[in-house]
Structures are given as structure tokens and as C-alpha cells.
Length: 132
Figure 1: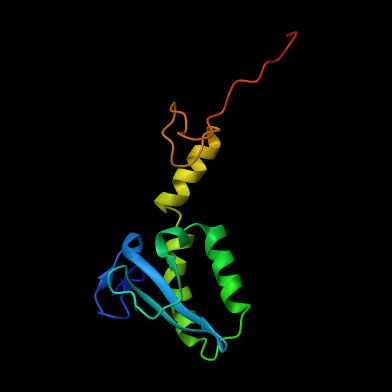
Figure 2: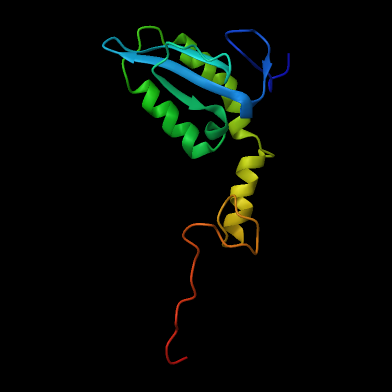
């Protein structure tokens, strides 16, 4: 098993980050029963979920971890295991999602929008410089 292998907690098969979800139950005891699973294998009783494809961004990953560890958790070990499993995908220098956002920012474009194309909603308009 490679450090870049994610394993579904439900079916024990390999899972790609784009097809994975982290689920948990939030109730009076706090947050518990954390599971890393395929989208199709996600436990039906889970009250909260976050798709792993969103957690590959460092800022989103850190916000997720900070929120989870800041709340009561009767058994934090499953959450720690999931965080350690996801960390290599977040910190990789060749992470495609991170590279796309950096590339877009370096050209003044919006992430997810091809260079030279305007975003569907909220396209930027030219500002009148008046007098130049």
C-alpha cells in the first residue's frame, strides 16, 4: 500500500479523492463515528459530510481540521486516522487542484475558468479610467 492510497472504511477497497467523502455524526455527545468512504458507500445515518475533493486545498483542509478538533469527540482516533490519510493529498507539490488555483491566480483569472474565457456569473467588466 502506498502513502497515496485511500481505503474505504466501509468496503475496504481503494478510493480516489474525487470519489470520496468524510462523514460523521453530530449530536449531543459531540462529533463521532468519522468515516472515509466512497460516495456510494457513505453511511446513511451520518448527519454531516464533506467531499474529499474539497479537502485537497490547504485552506479548506486546515479549516476542516480546526473545526473538527475544536469540538467534543468521544473517540478522536478515527478522525486522526482520516486526517493523516488525507494529508499527503493536500501537501503534494503536484496536487492538480492546488496547481490550477495557483496558475489561475498568477494570471489574474478565476480558478475553474479557462484562460481567456469569462466566468458565467459575475464576469468582470472593464472599469472606465476617465481622463487617461
